[in-house]
Length: 248
Image (cartoon, rainbow, N blue to C red; front, side, top):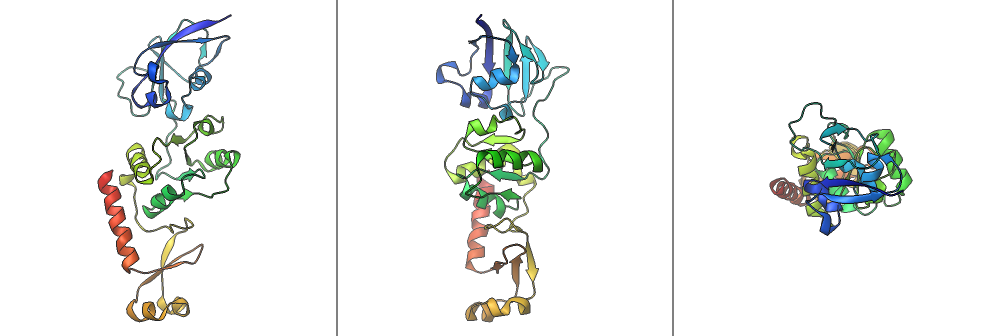
């Protein structure tokens, strides 16, 4: 037997709702009782984007069983509701934030590492692997695939709205307040390893003649052993970081 609820999504959750249903309450039909989490995701909104759910003006968790006739309001992170007994369905984020990114977000991974954030990325991670890493290591799963965020084991996640890497890093800076945690140029942009100062004599045989002549201070990735120094490339990275921070 088909039954109905009235449901409304607020602010940025409307990104996931059909255009003709945005910013308004609408009827939604379903056949049998189901959890509020399943109902919300059947409309297309990943549970990782939802924080507060009100059913008939009472705050509920994702296990609430919807039977029909309810009035439902769904809010994202950082909604300013002043109601007693609010239940927050989103877990706390790791501090500082750490990430795992899907295969389409390689440039974004480089930006996050450049800003000092522990960011796992490989171009051969499949969906089950990404979900497992997010769960086991408590990493925020960043993806362009909303279905991936609907996997049961994923509790920390964000769906990229933009396809432009510079806009993507701005999205994450604002969503997770990354400017509060940034420790710039301490991670290798290529492999995510920690960069440490290294004595020139330890790596002098690996340097090109002009680099050996004009530079005295060097740094090396603990994992991939790539060597860094404050040359023109360093200046360009500093300028890029300043631009990213200004945008956010």
